[in-house]
Length: 132
Image 1 (cartoon, helix red, strand yellow):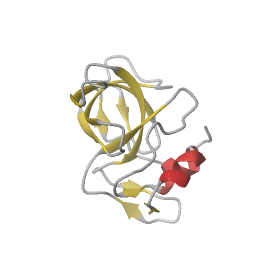
Image 2 (cartoon, rainbow, N blue to C red; image 1 turned 180 degrees about the vertical axis):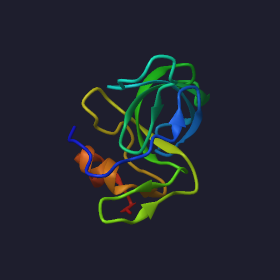
Image 3 (cartoon, rainbow, N blue to C red; image 1 turned 120 degrees about the horizontal axis):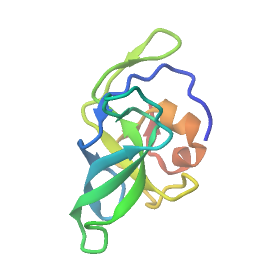
């Protein structure tokens, strides 16, 4: 996992429901924790594009339902600023399931993937249909 080049605004707080956009069988994820988050007292942890999170699967196939899994956020609605001055935002909040090393569990990703997530986890770029 590499450091991010952009200052990504953390737009997805803990206990949010986000969409799982890979072909594993999980549909909706509930954010439990953000890996590597160091915060301020009484501040709710939040995650943004390129962050690894711990989630529970709310809906999906019987195999995945009620499982605690790791995921990487690949899209967020809240706009963030890239180092070249461009502001980026997507239509939805989305993540994909990954293993301990950050490799995708599924073999296909639906929709665009943010460049920040691909820069941080290069294996995601091989599975992504297109990167923005």
